[in-house]
Image 1 (cartoon, rainbow, N blue to C red):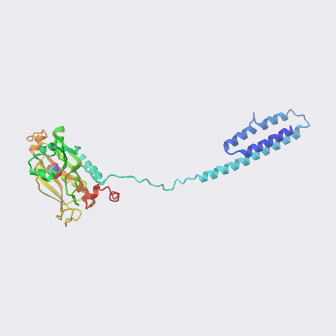
Image 2 (cartoon, helix red, strand yellow):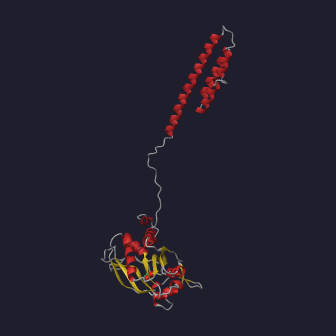
Image 3 (cartoon, helix red, strand yellow):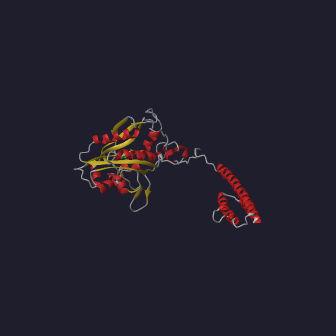
Length: 341
Ligand code: DAH
């Protein structure tokens, strides 16, 4: 019996020494101290059957061993706790530290201004429309009262595609005027932001690719007063301050009468620079009353309806708004430029 007790003690201490984590610790504790199946519990039960003279000695020895195993287990537990603490320390994450920030992209200044314009027009009940960039000669010129012999075509030289439908890279967003009239009829209010193309010798203010926003409003009794009111609302929305403007007659085959709405150059303040061609003024908003022929092409009766149209040079507007003095920067893809917006 005595030998048995010592064997158990030796085995227990060996077991305890080999413990590596708290799971193993629990297993070993159970192995020796489980009330029903624990090694010590079994032994203590056996002691009852031992003869009375041997019982006190064996009982004392068993108790001693029990205490020794209990102490060894407690010691092991303390060691393990220390270990987990130091492991925790190693894994310590300071949640208050600033993390490295991801560099998010952002919208191109052209897109930012386009969205702003769309919001201004939506608030006035205009719908936002789209149209094809590869346009037919018919919609780009013919239906806008610019027949093939018309000298106005010379001002809008573009890239012609060899095809039987006579396709061109659209020179302006105006073709969507007739497309919209044919699709929606009258009354109508809409704007068309979009990309246009021309065969240009590029310089600080000319690009082969640029953006416009066409506007069209058709209703009963629309007059120049309505046109001016909407243009003023637009400029107020964009510049959020008073901008000096001037209105002068302008010729466009698809409007009658036609106007040029100019704004004072915001780059040089009117003194004259390369962007305003030394004039101090910038043509920003050509506009006018829709020509009866164009209404007819759109399937709208000019005796019943009238309307105004405008073609806002969005690219030029962006240059004004941000003081960009070279149009070519906008499509350069140069991040040093773009990251400023
Ligand atoms: N489409 C013309 C251009 O690109 C601009 C224009 C002028 C549009 C007068 C209009 C307008 O709607 O009424 O040069």
